[in-house]
Amino acid sequence: MEDFNLILKELIKREEFNSNITDSLKQEFEKTAESYVQKGNLLDATKVFAITKNKEKLIQVAELCLKENKPYDAYSGFYYADDAEGLNKLGYIFLNLPDLNAALKCFKKSNNSEMILFIESNFS
Image 1 (spheres, rainbow, N blue to C red):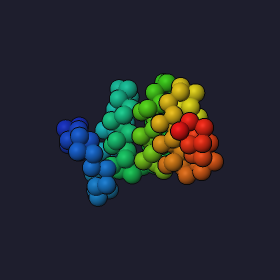
Image 2: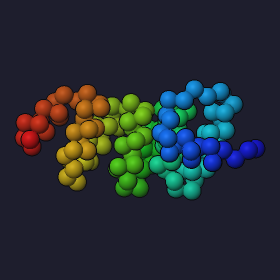
Image 3: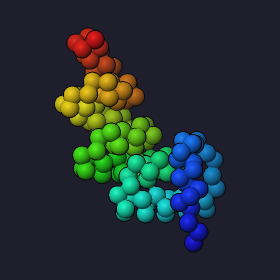
């Protein structure tokens, strides 16, 4: 098995998350991403799963980030997975920090118009 770590690190730096890749290359990239997860490198794992467009893994890693109290890293996973539920949950976490800008980003991405209006009306 080839090590795709160097290729992935270069793609991650360029943030080329909309790449079209073959199924076999996708499998190899995801194996590398799994090794990132095992080593605790959750942000890079998230970026690789964004490249492979694996929404299920993106959400799993984002949830793991939340368990490890890394909400800013979790944002990337929920964002690339277009997971409105996760983004809303994260938005409330950011409200409690408080980080209104991050909360607003989450609510905007999840199209939560009620919370967007609440923040803009009360904190602008």
